[in-house]
Length: 117
Length: 114
Image 1 (cartoon, rainbow over the protein chains, first blue to last red):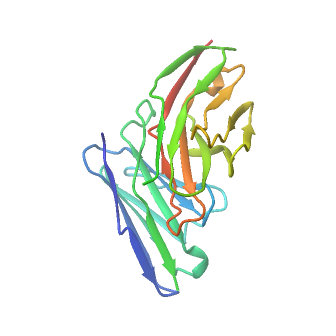
Image 2: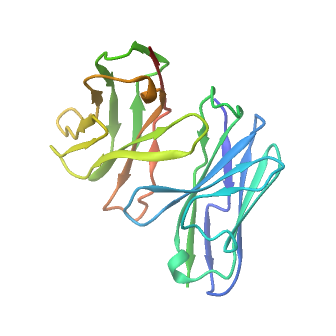
């Protein structure tokens, strides 16, 4: 089956720094990628939808200037947490699909755990 | 390790039919169980959840009961509508482990015919 990778799997950073998380589709071209956030012991929250070559669509309540998403190619989307603070500590998951009409399933990355000190 | 297995799709039903999508899990701890839904063109949305054995989650006419004895969390709806056409993902998250990351099944695509 299709594989989606994320890098890094774990990151610890100081408050005020920026962190970039990569999401790659390894064996297919991902026209659409989604970014989710899982708060500790809770369910997922959709943050944004990223389409290759266009600006990401953010969900209500998600700060687009804080969570910068770039989908520069059909195999790579990046999420940059700018000026991270401890409340940004979370588990971030991406998913990708090869079909913009969603006739195909989406594939999940393994997630990136961010800890901001 | 923890895992989720759900029935493969696509599942095609007529409107007003009864729906069951099977989901079973393997977990070493005490997981919370979830059903997520992805409508065409959208991201995942939480449909319902249950956090302990015998809990029943329900939303929008869908129900699922956390069965520890059978390690199952089957999704049911008594009368489906065309608007229920979507992909449904079963998932778990182990609340008492350090690594509580969410683990998904592969998804089941549901087609409802008018």
